[in-house]
Length: 364
Image (cartoon, rainbow, N blue to C red; front, side, top):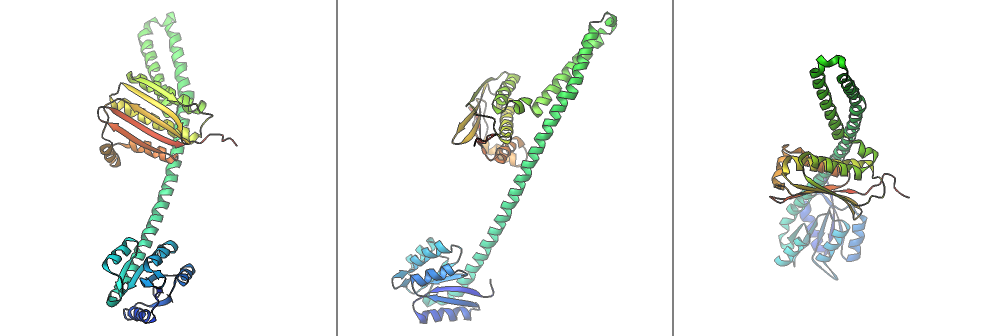
């Protein structure tokens, strides 16, 4: 508690005011008291500020404790407010606490005043500490979000570079090897080597296909070249074809290219949702929707699979057993949006993500 408190005392009886002040002094509370007797002086004192505790009588001429409590909460909500009255019954006392009073003390039991002030100041200290802790937590969260966003940007840049390297360098080198092997197979001088040449050609073709798939999974060029809508249409068809799913893609017409961050994060959420459908849903149909509503971009991925317990899966995800769910949520949040899962056992699952509608080149 501060070495000396500034107490604002709303009291029209000078004898009662003096008794309160002497009680505080006898209880070891060093303080400076400003006494006011009416509404106007009370408001002026509040506006002047620098008040640590407010003590208020309940019944005053043309003024009452509930009115003063309401004014105090409006002007300085963090300052403790203690009613000190001789006319406060039990019902009014309880009502005052419900309205936000810190405590109440009856004038015939002023021995409770000093402990009440101590408790009030302890609550103020704890509240200040909580606010500081919350502020630090928010600052830490903000820094962590900035770091996460930067890590995602670096990851996508590396994905793009590696995908381009696989396609341009390794892919082209394998294509040259493929063409050379095919030419050798046509040569009459290599008949004795045909089995080995065919085997080598099959290996090269298989590796070439794998390199192509890895490159597409890392960063499909269609996303950078044509944008989100064509990329999602391609992704939906490609993923569904792997396991023979019936797939449908619906989209609103996009006026222009979206902001690259929105395109990337929306695509990655869809990719994660479709991957989960392929691996776990045991679905026969899947649909992907891209819609514009309420100034936001909405992505929905629905399947008719076996569904799952969302709460149980979230608990596992927090423990690190299912990072896919958390990754999708994090990507949507980093882009300024959000994500929710809806799933019913034996009926299917819907992943709904939403993003701010940001264009690559905003129109003036």
